[in-house]
Amino acid sequence: MKMQRAPVPWGAVLRGGPAVLPLLLSVLADRPSLGVPAALGAMLAGINDRPGSRRGAVLRLGLPAVIGAFGLFLGTCLGELTGGGRSLVLLPLALGVLGLLAGALSSTGPVASSCGTQLLVAAVIGAGMPLPEPGWQRAGLFLVGAVWLLVLRLVLPSPVRSRAGAGAPYLLGGEREAVAAVYTAVADLLRAAGSDRAPGRRAALSAALDHAQDTLSGPRLRRHASSSAERRLHAQYAAAFPLAEAATALAWAGEPLPARIAEGPDRLARAVLTGTPCGALPAPARSGSGLRALDEALLRAAADFDNRQGRGLRTGGTSGRTSLLRRAFGPAGRAYGIRVALCCSTSTVLAQVLRHDHWYWLPATAVFLVKPDLGPLASRVLCRAVGTVAGAAFFAVLLEPFAGSAVAVGAVAVCGALVPVASRHFAAQTAVVTVLVLSLVALTGEPSAGAGRVVESLLACALVLVIGHVRMPGQRVASVRSALDTATSAAYRYLRHVLDDPRDGELRGDLRRDAYRSLAAARNAIDLSAAELPPVARRTAGSAEVAQALELLIDTTTACAVHLDGRPAGLSRSYADRLTARLTALDAAQAGVFRPERAQAPVVVAMA
Image (cartoon, rainbow, N blue to C red):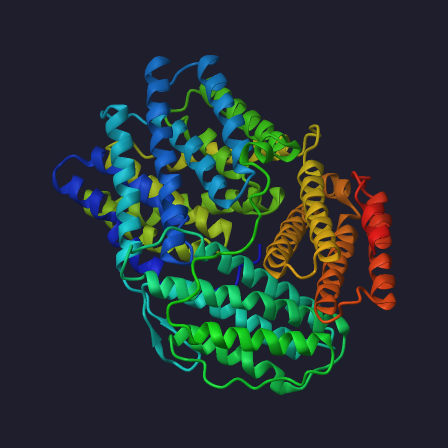
């Protein structure tokens, strides 16, 4: 029940109000049913409107909107085929198959998860919501609402301020902020070297690199005007790789460093934010391989920052090695797809048996609840129940007595502005969305639906809670094991390359990013499983020790890479012994949990 701590996303809040414009125009034209799909599209896009770059928003908001529009069209066709969405066999079967595919694809990443959710939710709403417009028109209006919010996201300025208070050009503000955060994280890790804060700072650096990589990976916003600035920003991001490697090696050594060591990365962070030259950088003493690597990385970074044109577009990372379909229909994807299909089809059957007027709310709620990226299952079920009751009570007491188009449109506008803030807590988000949905129902002229909303949401909570804790083949264990196996394979690839070809720094940087990023994904899966109720949590007991052993192995590999850069004779005995100890510890930790495939371990031990 804890609220996530994060700055208020004022840009998203200011966009939430104007996003109601298509709905307002439809009400003024006395055709409120035209604005309902548009408002739904804007609402779902608003849920995805998180802090980040504009280029990232094109994919994060645009792709789920297109998939959602297709789902709305498909659901409308299913509803017409089954006679107003009333079927105990065909409709649950069709939605179950759709849930299986959407759930499997949702397991491959956050954008895919949004696409799968919007596909299912829109299909269920299309099959059950009684609107007079045909399917193609509903889909078009849904897309209009989402695209309108995306246009606001791309056009409205959101200036970024540096620590010194200087403004930076807003077009690439999110990208500048993300790249600057990498250099700040490098400086923080250097300051934490030799203390117990170093592991947390190293994890923060990895997270900053992941965020910057995602931020820079979207489409270019302008073909010519911003190309030079974008190339330079990509070059500045690439220049952070050697710095991150050297800082990790220095932290691994466990010795405190002089305070002036962190001044160089701090100045580079300010230069990224302000777009100004970095100036002279204080050079560290070149005593030891780590400090020597840091000095050389600072020199290369200074040269890249002085190059106004940049070296070219590069985002780094090779996390897309495994194909999308292979990941989707692997053990974790299959387990999640089966769970989504069961929830979707079972809730549809239950809703059809109860014959409620708004039967589609039950499966739509179940689809949202089954998403694992919203927190542990028991937690999100409890938050959903509390939020739904609170939102329905607020609507019944404060809004329903003043029913009217103006009040409903105003409520939708206020809720749209509150969605980005409420996203910090699932119960708060549920309450805001409940008020928004009940306001849209009031606009269509249907009778009061607050009580039905509460009943169907509570039924969906109970259903998802039961299905989520049924022991299905590979459930939870599959997701954690798959994430750990992926992280282990990435760590072995990184280690083999360091031992085989230590001079290939560019590929080494990509493999290092893969290893740390895969490790972060594995830790997220482990933390999610550990926060579940005991029947689920105990199935993955001991997996945190595997992740810890992997982290130590990757850190040691990074230290070995820096050591080999300045040592043509090869790996020294002390480094080889520590590397072998890390491999042995990882092998022992794996043997006590999942006993995964470990064919590569003896090879890299022998090489070490």
